[in-house]
Amino acid sequence: MREKVIEIKDIVKTYKLYNKPEDFVKEKLCLGLKKFYRPHNALDGINLDVYKGECIGIIGTNGSGKSTLLKLITGVSTQTSGEITVKGKISALLELGAGFKMELTGMENIYLNGTILGYTKEEMDERVQSIVDFAEIGEYINQPVRNYSSGMFARLAFAVAINVEPDILIVDEALSVGDIFFQSKCYQKFMSFKEAGKTILFVSHDLGSVIKYCDRTLLIHKGKQIMVGNSADVVNAYKKILVNQYDDGKGTIAKEDKKISITSIGSDACWKDSMVNNPNALEYGNGVANIIDYAIVDDQGNVGSSIYKGKEFEVRMKVEFYQPVDNPIFAYTIKDIKGTEVSGTNTMLEGRNLEHVDAGQIVTISFRQNMSLQGGDYLLALGCTGYPEGEFTVYSRLYDVCNIQVISDKNTIGYVDLNADITYL
Image: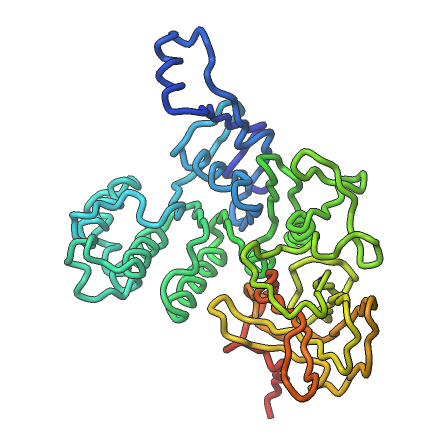
């Protein structure tokens, strides 16, 4: 029989929200006889059993209640109602560096955090060298942490939390600290915990890592529990929530307290309404044409911003022309978050020209290809251009118009996976 190490029953966490700071004072002066706040349920009805040796993912949009739940589990905060039972020693990476004193040295903070976690000085003496070696900050270990760069601070905080041999490790978006080599070491340590039969709660927006590492996953949306189960299935549900297409069994989901229908590629609704759009996208052109709609379409025909690595996908756009145009060029570009162009093409490069478009015509074009980019977040740019009378002209262009999230459980080196076929000869 499996050993249950965390039991969460009917958890509700309610906060008091005041419209103005002085309302809190007024309420105190009234001795609580009059309420000046409105209640907000950060969590409402969360239930989860976690067994020894499991790695449980917790996903949801920002503000969904993930971090609140972790704070309740670790005892940093207290639930309004419900019960939480935890068996074993917890080491939590909720906010890297929580509990660190800026005026103390790195070494002094190691011992301070050990004390907070319940270790004696002798027990920390046995662990301190492994923490120092893991952090890789050299002589700075004896300098006050106020002098650390943010990267050094994060590395030491991670090293402390992950090298104290807890029964339960809680990780909240903390495996992306430092350079790629340090991140690799963090994941190796993470996996050694998993292989040693330790229990892990893993909160991340890296959906590929959630699928790869987590035995089960909990999905929370606006404080409510949506589902718990197979990580791939839960990630698929989360992808639909991101673009307001989650089917609650009635074909709809609440969005800003309204009901909207599920959008499909064949519907009359605007595709772009189902994308994760950039409110600060740059739009310009000479007014001859306008990109009126666009979409990322996955291999199942769903419109959304998430694509699985190795799967076929489409970039689609609709362009409305207000004047006749000869030989328009349609293009897309994918950039990383630093603005580097990592892929893209256009109809001229592909030799798929459209000789003429009449005024009033709407052209819908699809670029279909295989997703070979590494897992991560990217930006999409779209354009319609041409060479009237030999002069390059932008009819309509949308820079960084929406997000593309590539979900991958295996990343190689660089931007693109060449899908190497390995044999031993």
